[in-house]
Each structure stands twice: as structure tokens, then as C-alpha cells.
Figure 1: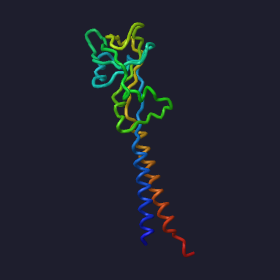
Figure 2 (figure 1 turned 45 degrees about the vertical axis):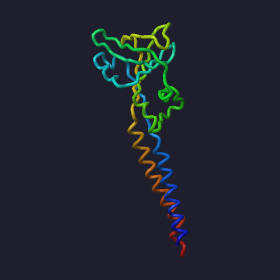
Figure 3 (figure 1 turned 90 degrees about the vertical axis):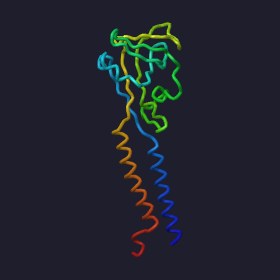
Figure 4 (figure 1 turned 30 degrees about the horizontal axis):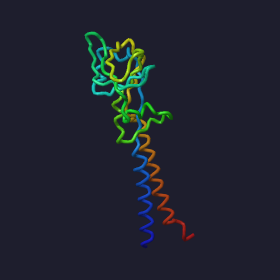
Length: 174
């Protein structure tokens, strides 16, 4: 009797560990928008976001970001992109998966523009919205996260049933 209980508890622990492992990853998705889609008055959507500027000259973090609606211009200081903001930049297999402790990726907006030849880290820049090629907003992929949770729930339940059937075979008397 004791060995059956210990086998059952090992099976439950294994199933629980599998669920915890797979649930530790969540997904994000890049949403592409043109500058015209994010009209001048709506650049307020960038407030509270981390702006990553991509240009021919390099990739920079836009520090001290501001948008002046009277002259229709984005300004800030170019900074080095810190390691915590490299998740999307270094994504090369299009899985768009992140761990919960890496959720800072959800605050990123990637701005693609030609900002000039002589721009370096520490340079103050001004970008007119018509010079923005595209914007990529990073958002949580709720649909993919839901499907993953459902799939893991079904797989975990099947694993528990399988372990139970292996420990207690129903047709041993036949």
C-alpha cells in the first residue's frame, strides 16, 4: 500500500513540475504600425514606454523621451540599449517567448528611422513623425498564452491519468 501511495505522489509531483516548467514561459507579439497609423495627437500612446530606435547607424535607447505636439516632433537623447531590452532585438527564431521576470519587453516600442550619419550615444535627436518608417509595439500574446495553458492542462491531466493507470491497472484480474 505504501509503495502505491509513494508512486502516486511521485506521479503527481512530476506532473506538477511539468506544469510549472511550461507555465513559466509566456508569449509576446510584435504589432507593426506605420507612423501615420499613430497620428501626431496619439503619440501619447508612447508615454511610459521604452523607445528603442533602430537606424542604419545602430540601435539605441531613447532616453528623456518627449513629444512636442505644437511642432510635431519626438525628441530625446540616444543611449546604449541595456541588456534587459535585448529580448526582442536578439529574437531570431520568432517564438516570442519570455519568462515572467523578463516582462519589461512588454514596455518596449521599436521605432525605425534614419536619424542621421553623425549620431552617437549621448546625442540629442529630434525626429519628425514623417521620418519614421515604422513602429513596433510589443504586447502580451493573450491568445497564445491561453492556448498554451489549455494544452498544458490537458497534457497534465492525461499524464496524471496515465500514471494512475500504470500504478493501478484496471484489468489485472482478467
